[in-house]
Image (cartoon, rainbow, N blue to C red; front, side, top):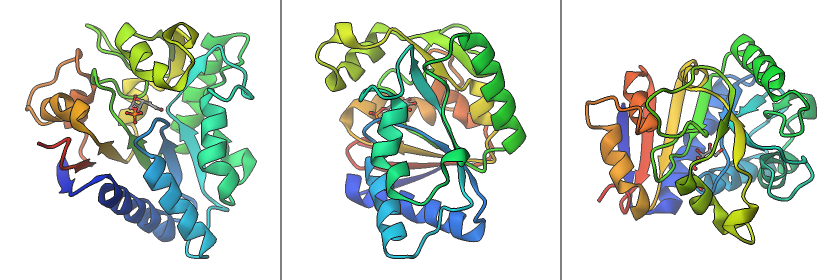
Length: 238
Ligand code: F6R
C-alpha cells in the first residue's frame, strides 16, 4: 500500500482527480468502481471540470458502484442511484447503459446480487474508488467475525446508521439493509484508490497500515491487495 498525505481535503481531491483522469486518458474504456459518501465529492467535481473543459471523455467508460440501500426506490433522493446521477453521471457523457449499481428495487435481492457480481467480474474493474467508514467498513462490508466475498445483502450496524443519519431526517429513516459488493468483489479490482479525510478516520487509517488483518476492520484487508493507493488529508493522518 502506498500512502500520500495532503495538506487538506481540496489537495487530496485534486490528487485523486489526477489519478482517475490519467487512468481514463490512458484507457478510454476503463471500468470504474465507484463510491458514494461525502469523501469522493471533491473528486467527482474535479472530473466534471475536466469533462467540461474538454480534457476528459467518458463516452467509453463504464462504472460499477459499490453499494445501494435496500429497499429504496431509485427516485428517492437518498438512494445512491440518485446520488451518483446528481453528483457525477448527469454531469458527464458516460452512457446510461454503461452505468451499474446494485438494484435497490429488486424483488429478489439475492438473485440481483448474484447477477451484479457476475457482471462486475466479467467486466473486470480497472480502478476501484473507496471511502472508509468510521468503523472501518468498505462498501457496506461491516466489521464482523466473517466477511462475505461476493455482492450480497447485508444489515447495517448502528454505527453506520448513526453516521449516515446526517443525510436523513432522523436515524429511524435510514434503511437498515443494503446491497454491497463483497470483499472479494472489491479485491478483484486491478487497482484500488482509498480516500481518507477527517479526524474521525484516524483510527481506521492506522489499522489500515498496522501489518495485521482484522475482520473487525474490513479496511485492514486492503493490505492483502498488490496495488492500493491511499490518499489522506493531514487531519486524518495526524
Ligand atoms: C459508499 C460506501 C461507504 C463510504 C463510507 C465513508 O458507497 O461504500 O463505505 O465510503 O461510509 O463515507 P464518507 O465518505 O461519507 O465518510
